[in-house]
Length: 512
Image (cartoon, rainbow, N blue to C red):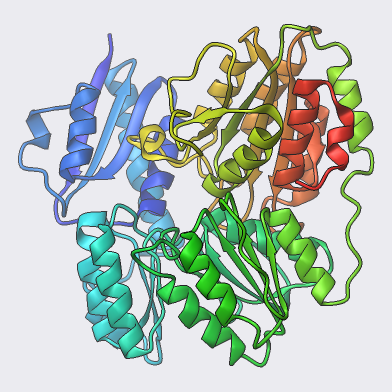
């Protein structure tokens, strides 16, 4: 008999990373079918109601309350999971030490930390702008991790920050590395001469990790939020970040990364660059943006990082060694009816870049975050599909896939059983904040797909460095042992997938 239990902690707010830790712990307990730890916002309570949790202890729960919910095979199993989730959250929040009295407001935290100059805001979107304004009023730069912040609120925040001479990184800024200190999801990379400005979270991580692997490092990584180069926001925080890095003596080259920007904003930004050598990656941009003196424009993250190391006088990496033969081997036993690429991503920018690369060679790629009108879901039978599984429809009531790979593991197996699938394409994002051993869950799922003699290939890309807590080479080795074809960049993984699906191994030698 299924048991549903709820526990509410009134007036107890924690950030999303801690919530995901508690959720993952509860999901790992014996007998648990479904579990979550959330703040009691109306949207989250609606999700709980959809899972059969309503009334009872949830009556009166609100946006300042912490809610644990578990569905398990028995009441004892549900109770045990609730206890484990609460203990994991308390231990993580206190760093394994006895919990000390903590500030309950931003002002209190600033007063307790003399010399502090950055605030990281991670609260539900409807409250995020207010907290960010409070941080600006306290004279702090802001990393606004929260998403679902209205566009006009973003414009207001960034306009005010500009007037105060402060950085407003975000909303939805998941990555930053300031003065060697990582904020949000970030990676262990060496210090170096490249200043990265990222209007794309995993795009910033891809840039910093490739720079590290290819012989250099970063001075700063400034996340500005994915909408910064939109027409309404106008690139205002990107422009401020450019001025900051131009004035930074440790920065020799600028690397700017963005999902599809407003063409007019992109052109005006390029015209303003040039005080230091600069490379700008404009993923999926329609039309041309003329390059200026000392300014390179690229269409992929891989191309942008190669252009950056070229500006530093470093040799280009070999990106095709062994890949073409690996692709040829992967397609050798592939039945003719298997022609579709199915991408399952934890990184939204990596999903977008892959769709740009795939669609240029295979035609329409359908997605929950489509490149073109008419390419949304549901997809036609046998179509190419790329899913950003970090989007809200996949994370409501469960952790982000960078933190908990379980949902993607299930989808890898499901897509592998589709007789139209030629390639299952996945990314694995390492670093601080990500799952401590993601391939422990993903590799067994990949093995199930590759074990079938007439099944699809699995192409995998691991974003990270050897210095990351998970260890790059160990993660890659486990995927290789599971029968995956490994690629050196996310763009090259998309090229390899297109090559297998079209039976053209030569595609791996192309520029993405």
